Amino acid sequence: MVQDSSVLNQDEKKVLGHPAGLFVLFFTEMWERFSFYGMRVLLIQFLTASVLGANPGWGWSAEQAGALYGTYAMLLYITPIFGGVIADKYIGSRAAVIIGAAIMTLGHAAMAFDSPAMFFIGLGCLVIGTGFFKPNMPAILGEMYKGLPDKKDGAYTIFYMGVNAGAFFGMMLCGYLAETIGWHWGFGLAGIFMLLGTIQFWLAGPLLGKLGVLDKKPKEDTEVKSNLEEGEVKHNNFTLVDIILMVIVGIVGLVYAFNDPLSKNNVLDVFAFLDTPVLRGQNIMIIGALVLFLVLIVSRIQRYAKVVRDRMYGVILLAFFLIFFFMSFEQGATSLVLVARDYVNRELTGNSLLMFNIVNTLLTIVPLIIISWVLIKLALATWSKIALSNIILFVCFILIWGAGIWMLYNEFTAEISEIKVSWFSILNSFFIISLASSVSKIWESKYNPTAAMKYGIGLILVAIGFLILGYGSLGAGQGVKISMIFLVLTYLFHTLGELFISPVGLSYVSKLVPARMLAFMFGMWYLAIAIAQKLAAILGGQVETIQENYSLSHFFFLFTIIPAAAGLLVMVLNPIIKRLMHGIK
Image (cartoon, rainbow, N blue to C red):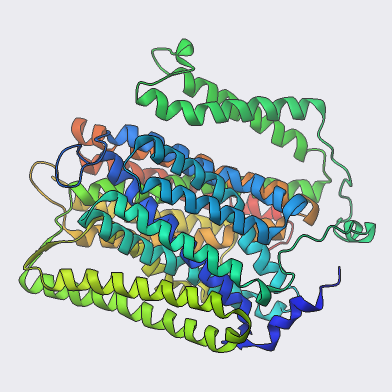
């Protein structure tokens, strides 16, 4: 397909050696992540906060809150599968991004109201909006760099920094506002930046040309033929049995996702009639659905030629171990939030408070100066074409600078202060920004490990993080608090583990799977993450129960054993996975 010349006009103006349009995407993604992570860091805290006091929440147990969060997180990774298909076939990537951002804005606005009905409407809007937004921003970025392959890696690195900058400031500022003034103020702040980010992207249309606009011309057969590998089955249509299995698995999975939080809050239990002394009915149903799903996947893969079939099995194996990683890593959104709130010594006075304020100031101001400089460069390059979009971005930065300075002023003028619970969550984004380039250099060196070894190392690093926190929490719970250094080190090792696994996973999918089956296998990949998110929240919800019946350290040692065992197993399977890849590195 020949690109419209208006698409290429973006190359006339460069920012830091890249098309200016990249930085429109950078800031759009940054504000969306600001809103998303700003809300996410508050969710478990708000649900489990006491119903009484200066900043009341809903007073749920960790198990109840984990069930709701798990369903929410699970759906966030399933809806993009459908959002990507709708964009590809009907509306185009750019329209999907705008629609998704608008729906998410409504979701954040709903959560700003102190009403249970509006809260759940807001969560629903965020799930639907993310489905449209999440898969289509990278699609636009990929289309932008079709003719610039040498700059593609650098572009994704810059884009990834936008993701983490947004997450960093969202968790810091929304969390601070929510914990200082009130939860719904934090939810509201997330919504403001989501709205402004949506408007600036929409107004940047003249710069983006035809990028992300659906081309409704039929594609030529030669394009399909060029994507076929030797020996690949050209048509692997879904059989009647396939369709029946997909319907059954889909219905059971969806009902389970909603039944879990409803049953744990004593509202409704659809599967109660199947309860046994050993397993709850809903667990029996979801295990059965997973077995049927495996039958479906294996039966479909078996229809392909040997090389393609083996590589797809390699992807499935990596996806299986990905579940163990995210099941452990995502404790950062559930159990680690509660541990930071209830068991970590966060009170500071005197010199320790001064030192923290200095560090916090540098963490806030330095990134803001760098990103503001990028904004000015973008404005200088594009003012004549998208002045209104740039004005909206300047408004965003005036607001974020104001919020940051207000936060720092409050902390510097306090004689005694307590580090906010949400502050610890920013460590992951900070460590990613600091360490990502160093870790990526390993992949370019002679020490670049195989896929299985990367997964094994990543899982073991996560296990080490929990081992450190387990050691630090020995004796905690009876008036004894954990030193915050243990939690900081845990986030450090978890981030290192993430850098070994998360960025390289999708890369292997794209390398191992023929183009015609990419959508199918990316769907499988996101489904594995969705399952992991649900498992993470279910297990994280047990932190209070395990702490009461055993100890807090027992909980963390459990999460030391699980990823460590998975990491060792995937390393043992390294020769088999290499053989399945048939030379792909």
